[in-house]
Amino acid sequence: MTKNNEKTNYKSYSLYTDILASYKYWTDTSGKYQTATGKVIVGIAKTDDRSKLTFAKNGSIVDADAAKIASASIKNGQITVTAKSQSGTVYLWVMDTGDAGAYTCCPVTVKMAPTALYTYQIPNAVYGTTAKYTKASVDVSDAVDVYVYPTYKEKKDVKKTEDATYTAVVEDKAKDYFTVTKSATDPYKFTVRAVRLKDNKQVSGKIIIQCAQNGKKVNFTATAVNGVKKVGFANPSGITLDSATDTIKISASKTAKVSGSAALQLEKVSSSYATTDSPKIYVMGTADGYDAAKFAAGTVSIKNIPSTAQKKITVSISSDKKSVTVSAAKGASAGITTYFLLVYNTSDTAEKKGYKVFSVTTE
Image 1 (cartoon, rainbow, N blue to C red):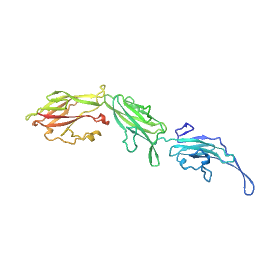
Image 2: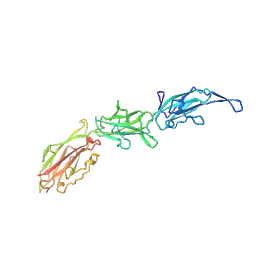
Image 3: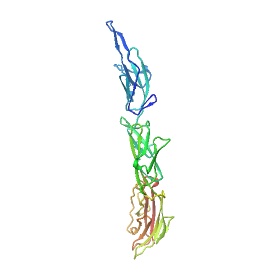
Image 4: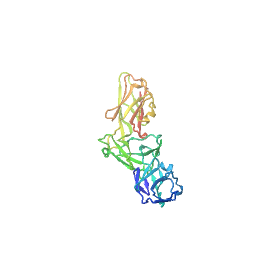
């Protein structure tokens, strides 16, 4: 609420008037001279034109639209103006009902602080339609943008208010791992940056966004990670590797299991830390044998299961994640091709999801 450019963060605001009640004089029906003390009344109206005011029988000001924005009362010269359920500018009227008839008015602007805060990934989110953005994995030295969305209720409708201001801090236990910066041009935009990992492992922390006017808060959870940007195979042994087409060839034998290996090369986001990703390999019957929609949502689901013959070809990752072992079981036929999905990043950010589809063929 602001009154004459003076801001206040409270629902009610008090001020005083120097208008005093004057006497009223009249002659009654019997001709006797009568006197009485008038009183000082206050009211809220949409107009600053006294001639357009509407009065009730008891002398009070009546304005239904203004009453949705603010109300006013007076006691011993102290006026209390209270914000109601809508924002807007109205006029506070102070009047002497005595014969002197002094009066004045001043504008009062009611602004809406939020009753709830939400966070979104996009600046022009639509409440109730756009998916809320409450958490994210952030690669070390990288950042994500978070937009606060403040709402209040007007009857049954949820509306966005742009009347308040907001601050953001990192919770104390996570201050070594994250920073948060408010945009210089967008009052609802905050940039959350991951600055380091904890003992080479991922770490999570809360970013607390708060309304400066009424203290309403919303928490955004960030997790600092060191993702893998790219994977590759190198230094094949016992297998033939075509890196350009991501194909591997291995000999088949009717009498013995045949195995080979290759180094697994991981290109990390930051070379300063170990990766927090855990590469995994899934076997498929076809090159597109996984559910792309589920993968986009962060879940690996194989929809095309390999045949019995294809299952005779296996690929596994070493415990130290530094190499892969390719095997063809005893009795595997030549000319069998099995497909594999190597997943190295299932980040919640679509453009960071990392995978490689490769094939192994027996010969």
